[in-house]
Amino acid sequence: MRAKRFVKTLLCTAAMGLLLTGCGKEESKTDAKTEAKSEVKTEAGTEAKTEAATEGATEQKTDADIKAPEGYHLVWNDEFDGDKLSDADWNYETHEVGWVNHELQEYVASDQYAYVKDGELVIQPTKEVDESGKAHYTSGRVNTQNKHDIKYGWIEARLKVPEGKGFLPAFWMMPQDESYYGQWPKCGEIDIMEVLGNSTTMNYGTLHYGEPHKQNQGSYTLSSGTFADDYHVFALEWQPGVMRWYVDGQMYFETNDWFTAVEGEEEKAYPAPFNQPFHVILNVAVGGDWPGDPDDSTPFDERGSMRVDYVRMFQMDSYDENVTKPVHEVSFKEADETGNFVSNSDFSEAEDLNDDENWKFLQLNDGKGSAEIKDGEIIIKTENFGTEEYSIQLVQPGMPMMNGKTYKFSFDAYAEEDRQMKAAVTAPNVDWIRYFPDTSVDLGSDWQNYSFTFEMKEKDDDAGRVEFNMGKQNSTGTIHIKNVRLELAE
Image (cartoon, rainbow, N blue to C red; front, side, top):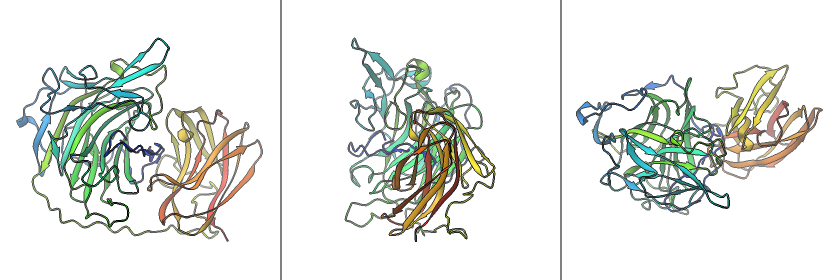
């Protein structure tokens, strides 16, 4: 929860990045932007081994009633069947306003903001307005540090998220000893569930690590309903050298490639930093870099609460930590016969703009619009330009960015009313750095060619991304784009 773009989108691609804690208080959260940096699946994933979600809180269970995933055994659970949060199991956290990510809430150790009711843990953000009209936000954040920590296992929670602009509920994990490998992100972070309050059909699962900071992220989109309408089970399967994320028993993301190091030193032995005990954290953030600020429509009653039916930890029956770090071989995409790295650059193919092949159209952070490929161009209509530049976004990943090379990035565009958009070439897998910086272009009513040359000065990256950002430009004017090219300059 410290650094999200966040995706970030496939995030972005948030994330877009974008976090709430830390090994220290480093505020290096990236913008939650768009698309996830790794494989993303929807509801047709691998079956998990636990119960699916059903409406409402589950009936009271004993440990014998809880079925462990195959190869695991139950080591701790809280079904929240008592009348208060157990201090033998949970710690209240306190943090001031703006502690990380420019968030607006204060975390207070009080059962007013994190409490047990009707068989559930309720985390309730609140808003108070003083005599001068200034709003003050308070919320709850609890963790199991030094009470229930686990290394390798299956960790899951069944919960329902709040819906409302500016909310960021989270179910995630941090190390028991956050200083063992050094300040965040070197210590590692595992985000099991993050759902933006104004986009409650998509869940993000993210791994943060490294120095420099890197993140591996996947996302899961519901085909019907929202994560605020019903309870859903969010789970992490953590084994030496591999992690898998699940929603309602469907695996949607897997990763095995990470590292940690201190600047100037060799990397620690893999699978560090994810070879140490981690604890669970539950919280609802208000505002900040990724979700944006709340507005008058944001509910601070029970509709704005996160409701947790249970939290369960299952330990692996046995495991072997003698694992080998996968070798990542950079595989550069080849240019077409004209030297262009962009696929379907002339929009001759009316491709699916929702999948992860070639072009993808994204709507995030209150952005609402549509995109259509027609007659050799893409036409992007905007109903609501949203709160972020990436709220309306067209992207194509897989761009081969080679150190020391000079590139030419060009395209033709016009708008049906005078307006601006921003173009960039970015690094979803490398903390969302910019190989070609976000550059504003003025669009008029006639086709115009835009051309830029830049030198790639960073390490080789086979997963760069072309971006067109059309949100937060104070215009809903329709944009037309064609002839997009990214090529090596002569």
